[in-house]
Structures are given as structure tokens and as C-alpha cells.
Image (cartoon, rainbow over all chains, first blue to last red):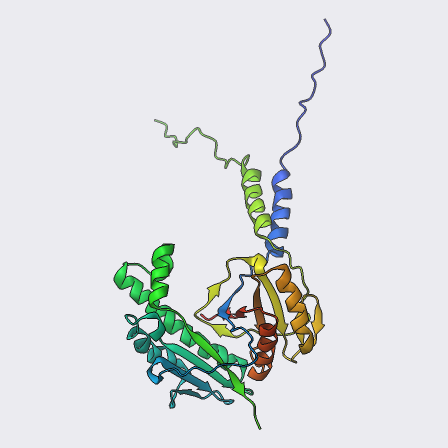
Length: 174
Length: 137
């Protein structure tokens, strides 16, 4: 009797598969740019040719002025940039229970020569003040932070603490 | 009496058969999250830092404007002049009505210059903007 030749097992060698996959993995790891687009969101006012000026009661306004050397003036009082949050917070809080048209307006005005960085720092401080008030309000009312709320309660907090920031046009230097 | 060390009879090997599967899973994750950069940035800029930062939820709505250290403005792939912003952004807005303009402006730019750009954006009705900033630690 003739012995049948043993046929070798027909398998694809998979031992190098892990290496190949690793190589691809490393390529994508290196090529990945997880760049999250983050920043300070704002909404510009519409462009209207002739602007109507409306008088706003003084206690509703918080006017921030930044000059070209980066000095900050809040309602005529010179303060440091990092005090803006602490100064604005009680003023926002005092207006939580007031109706919609009586909430605090923060006006931010710069010089034409002011450095952009100073403006962003000030805007950051203002936003921070609003966010902290929102967090505290939702904490006292719902027991969680603003970001963890569901949409309807979030809107309720937004209603109570709206972020109103007005960017005033800088004055021309003569 | 002979003492013998007790040894377990099981094989002392890490099973590597499922390794490719695990690696492929990781690979797929990175392939899905990767966004290859579409535009080449031609201007040199460094962003300001801020704390109260929000993330933009919808990447597809974003349109970028770069402003470099030397005051060059870039939209899409090319450098543009101040007067051209309005036209370009207006066509962009018509294609995508709720476009968010992400302003990537160098931190040492004058505010007057930034305001001029904002004025152009207002004329083009691109009102949702975002001052791009890095997270301050």
C-alpha cells in the first residue's frame, strides 16, 4: 500500500498580522490631530447703517474700558484684570430675580491700539463671572452644575442668568 | 524523601491570538477620529489663552479666518485683503446659513484691526463668531 503524501495545512500565516496592524496603528496615532475647536463664542450685532441709541439705566450697565497699555477701568474705577470676575459676580447675582429687560449688560470697550490678548483676557474674565453665577444658581436650584442639567432646566438657568456682552466699537485715535 | 517544587501544569504563555483583533480595534478608533488637515496655514500665529472656553459642537459649521503676527489674513487656502473678506464670507454664508466663524488671531494684534474684520463680518451677516483660544491651565 502506498502511503498518501500528507498535504500541508493550508493556512495563512497570521503571526505577522499583529505587526502589520501595529504599523498602521502607529501611522494613525502620529497623523491624528485631535484639535478641538474651542474658544470664546460671541454673537455680533447686525450691521445697521444708522444706529438708534437707547438710554440704559446706569445700574444695569457695567462698562469695562481697556486702554492700550492694558489698564482696566470698570465703571470709572481702575481695577486689575483679574479682579473683573470677582467684581462682576455680585452684580450679576443681584439681578437674577429681576425681569428679562433689567439684567446686567456688560459693555467691553477697547482702544484701537489695545492688544488682542488683553481683550481676550478681559472677555474671559467676564464670561467666567457669568459661568460661575450660572453654576451657583443651578447648584442651589437643581443641585448639580449647569453642564450636567438637562436641556429644559438649562434653558431655565439661561433665562435667569443671560450672558449679555456688548462689544463697543473702539474710538479712533486722533 | 524527595522534595519537588510544585509547579502548575498550565502553560505559562500569554495568549496572543487575539492581539491583532485588539490592535485593529484601536486602529479603527484612530482611523475614525483622525481628521486630516485640509488647509495649509500660511500665517504664523500664536493664540491667546483663556479659561472660560466652550467647545464648538458642530465642526462642519466652522469656517476659519487666520490673522498672523504680521497682520496677514487667510481665509481658506489663500491670503486675502481686508476688503475681500465681506465678499468671501457672504458667499460662504449663503452656502451655509448658520456658519460659525472661528477667528484664529495672533495675540499681539491690535484691537482696531480685529474690529475692522468684525465690521466686515457684520456686513456679510456672519454674526456667530468664536475667538479661538487655548485652554489656560
